[in-house]
Amino acid sequence: MPNWIIGALLQYRYVIIVPIALVGGPPFSILLGFIVRFSSLDFIPTYVCLMIGELVGDVAWYWIGHKYGERFIKRFGKYVSITEKQVVVVKNMFEKYHMRILTVSKLTTGLGFAPIVLFTAGMSRVSFRKFIEINAVWQCIWSLLLLGVGYFFGNIYIAVGNGFEQAELVVAFVIIFLCIAGFAKYTRDRIMKKYSQ
Image (cartoon, rainbow, N blue to C red):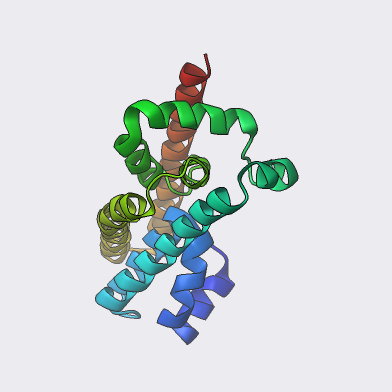
């Protein structure tokens, strides 16, 4: 996470959490938990601002899919990794696993699967009320979990003795996160392949 983001968080505090949360993904949520551990931010306003930012992003993808659909894919799809083939696959999944696919999209936010699902939900005219209810419930859980991971990581960071051990801890954390991201990508690709047949 770039140093300017940490600096901006400490200077502007909660005001800047919402816009950064739109694009920050899980790493940003975990960073916030880490900062909360050191009492630089209070938990409740951090938690609320994080959820608002994430949900605004979800609604934005839904709205783009609902309003522009095919036109957006043809013009901008290649820039945001949304293809016509992927949309067709997700539409097929929606027919059978309507609720589950929205849940999976929330739990894979930042790992490349969520934008396709959110966009397709809007394009498929999924009920906005149902869409926002499912996303809001899972966002509460997901944000709490990620903040908790960051807070727990902050506890370990404090408990570790010296700078070298702290650096090792950071490296280990990055490796674990990359492994999770790799597994999520593998799972996403398997799902897309299965439902594209």
